[in-house]
Length: 345
Image 1 (cartoon, rainbow, N blue to C red):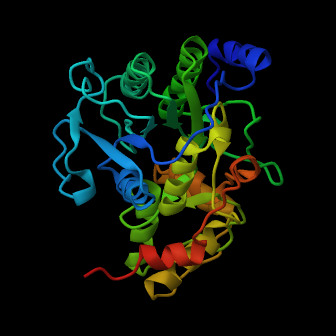
Image 2: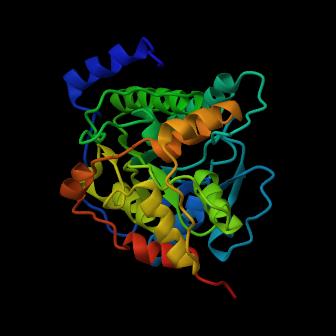
């Protein structure tokens, strides 16, 4: 388990100032919001929602990204956040930044030193952007982190909360956690408002990663050995997350806060597969294979790690954002899955 000296600085800072130093503002109406990672899975939905709520939108996409023809992304800023930003952003003065851009975690990472590469993009480039924001008068910086900062597994009846001790479990989560710390220290020095959001698995149309892998498993029509799993996993629909991020950018009460977010309730892997299959218009073939047998089989196949996210629990308690911002998901999981698998023209 990762343990960095920076942990002590975090807990010391919490004792001194709460989670973040804040200088809250009280006047929020229509805002200029800059979204990084705007061409990504979450970014597309977030940008549409920002425009629908009447805010001015500025979008930043990665250099070399080609899938940026959507109307809400035009015009957009093209930038490499790992390089100096002064000239690229010289003419922009957003009120708030929602920072989505990141190096994602990969099943097969080919980087010679994955942790160094994650740090370069997720920590160092994030801090570079935040320094620019602080020096140019950006009021609020919303950082989209990861529930992986808390860890990869929860025990029954003990969901993660904002007060759970950090325990990043892989290089991606380590880089996200270190970015949180660096941003907190910058907020203390500069007075820029900071809000950190740690989402669990995000799902929706064309969702990447683990959700896409579950879709492909269901599409095979083959028997799936997950019927005996009794776990609890928290997820969040991409539109619900977009709404939460906008609230974090515009609500005075979000200044200085750390939030966990999720749809409710958490579901077991078999329950999720059944809900997904129903939305897809099919029926899952779930075989109740005992978990110890499944572990042995996957270990022999060299795929022991693939079982972790399917068989273990990762549950979050998002009471804090619900009480602080009066936020709750507007789309139920059943409706969200129906939208996810709705036919497209």
